Image 1 (cartoon, one colour):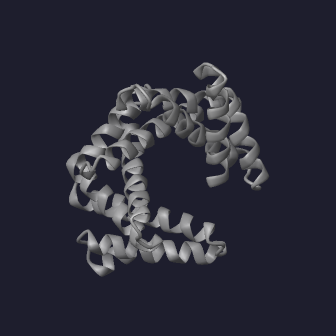
Image 2: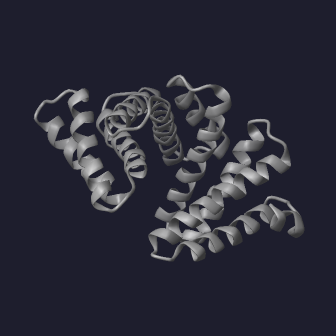
Length: 237
């Protein structure tokens, strides 16, 4: 992920420095990210999705100079969608990738400004729905963005990967409650995001699939119990 993001960022900056428009920035950054993702051994589908998110981030950095947070997120979403289509994703998958990129950019901007999880969720939800995604689908995308941006911020402040995953899960739970979910559904959403973050971290750290899944399961139980579930209910979930 880091290599694809770096490739997209460098390519985007080079095109921008030459006076290229956003369409060319998207095209060149997307190609660079896709090459890096393929070189890392990802499957075509994984590489295409990483290309979309990496391109969205690179575009957000370019657009942030003079645009509002909402405009920057929308620009990132459009760029991610185009990059995803060029990388071979179906229209439906590309639209989902565009919405996810827009939500992630909006969530990261809100988190950087010290916004509470509930406010971060609203910013991410607005960005996702602005790309044309239904509110129902956008809620899940926005919650995921809240969890990831909160976990990234925790990592940046020196937390361990496991602690950061718990921070992300807790942020998702708070946002889900604010979105009107029941206590149980919010707890499950937070635990799910915490587990996903831990699994991704375990894979990046070189652990095998079984160990990564085991780590994720433990994190889900811990997050669910922290959100108020009984031990038995948390383990069952």
